[in-house]
Image 1 (cartoon, rainbow, N blue to C red):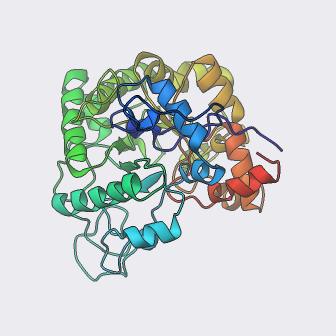
Image 2: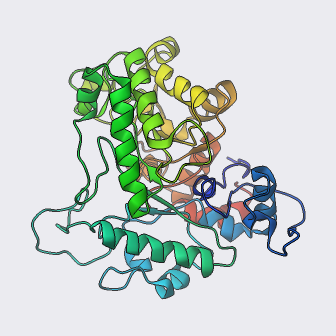
Image 3: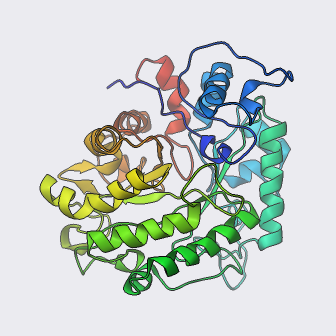
Length: 394
């Protein structure tokens, strides 16, 4: 299978819409240029966004582009000191071409297990997450490295969970999603996620892995509390309110807003036997009537720049390998211009769960061909992209 590497190379361009430097990733032609002040055009916030992106792309090597397509989470020791502080030395040694994202900067992944009480979300090692000051210090050090110590100075995305409030130490926890939907109050929902966004930006995070606009249609499914219920209209209305709270209605981002990640596209809420990530046997008509509406409205009515596919398969095709879903419907039919970011480990699960292949390189080719731009939480498959490009597979 071959696919073309075009708009795929995305990386930190979203964050840069609200920052001074605008990175972006895709193949591009043209000569690098400078503004009248002598600095690279892509670093000039007064220049048109498209021109800045094209200028940056014209300067990037293949390895630098590929580096923007991956995050780091389980292997954070590669960018940290043994004590868990960000290390420019380690980061430069292990990521000489830059890095696209840091996954969950609030946690302490990469440290040896600690015997403490009050583990952070997702911290099976029992570690307590960083407090607000520690997180801000960590993020600032990481961004300083990215912008001053890498060749092109591309800032990174810092994403974190925020399903019903920022999932971080001492942050505000609000009622779960299903409870928010039960209020039938979009204005209240918008206010709630405005608070979450403000708390995230105060610590340096600039992207939320939320909201969940899955439509829950099987009462046995164990993740219903994460959704806004069974009705596609209600899911859309509350989901749109959450997006307005997180991100606002226009770009660039305000200083107290973060990008959203619309998830999980789709059919997640009607799995076989109600089992989470189970296969979904759903006809196209049912998809269009019940599952597509919240996603379609969100990407058409608001400047959503990140969508996450679901773990499950639809009629035998995993969402992360579903070109019809991610390219034909999302991009071509709905006109979506943003990125598609993988759910955690979902690309590798084409081997372990879906049994499509036993080769990691194959999963990268299949996901990219389908329309997945970024691999999270770590770049295991997408780290192979330069070699796959040179081999003519991408």
